[in-house]
Image (tube, rainbow, N blue to C red; front, side):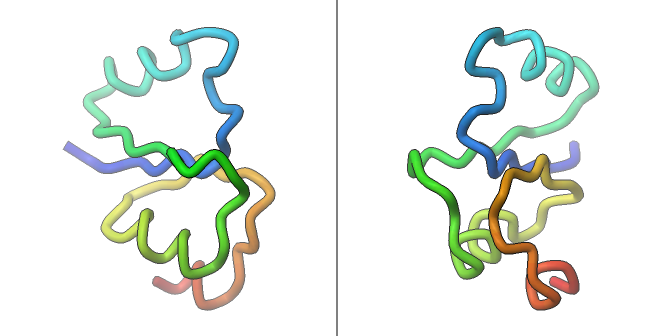
Length: 67
């Protein structure tokens, strides 16, 4: 099962359908539960081991992208 990190807090706010689609495709979902835009260090911590990120407006620096 692959890990996907959802960085944006607005993802699936109006409907659970986007989350259900991800789960039906055998993805393990981790979400930003801080209720705020993430810092570079937050992204590195929470997305550690993720095969994908559903991105928001966080700083996706070179350091984030190569890790």
